[in-house]
Amino acid sequence: MAMVEKIDLAQAMALGSDWRHLCHVMLYAPNPEKLFDGHIKLRYAVLMCMRFDGRLGFPGGFVDDDSPNLEYGLNRELLKKLGDGVSTFTVESSDYRNSLADTKSKVAIHFYVKCLSLEQIQTVEARAPLSKDFGLEIFGLVRVPLYILQDGMGGLPTFLENSFIGTSRQQLLDALQDLRILTPEIVSNIKARIARHKQKLAFSGA
Image (cartoon, rainbow, N blue to C red; front, side):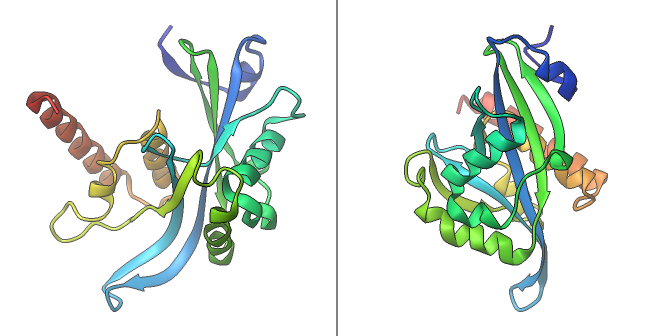
């Protein structure tokens, strides 16, 4: 069995009592704003967070055993991580995307995607610094730049060279492709660029 493999939700929920369940969500919203006097269309606001370990990831956390379902536990974690700005929405079962099983750590990882309004995103950003875990587990929120500048690197390619926790970089790209925010061709080119970047780092010993 692979160390981390994709499983369906029913399989994940049937795992033994010694397994823990970790839930994260990608919050995004259509964004009509433009950058540099209208030269670059932002199109969408996609939120990720800077974690306590210096890596980027999606907001969420481990679901307690006393939670009646995954979504209840996830929404409770969002309140702790992002503050009361999340009170304008609720992550529901219909927002569920996929699950992964990490057999080494015995953790089932569940990923959700929630579409909000730009005003809701802005409220979350404004209230996050007042959350319980801000400055402890969460150091800030960042928006993913979905554009690519003329040099071919500025924007999303450079953003993706940051350090990400677990499978969050892959989850981001897959979600952007599934939502048709990015085309399969662009995603494929970006993945190839990331692979070359990793090879370069490995060769240099960085």
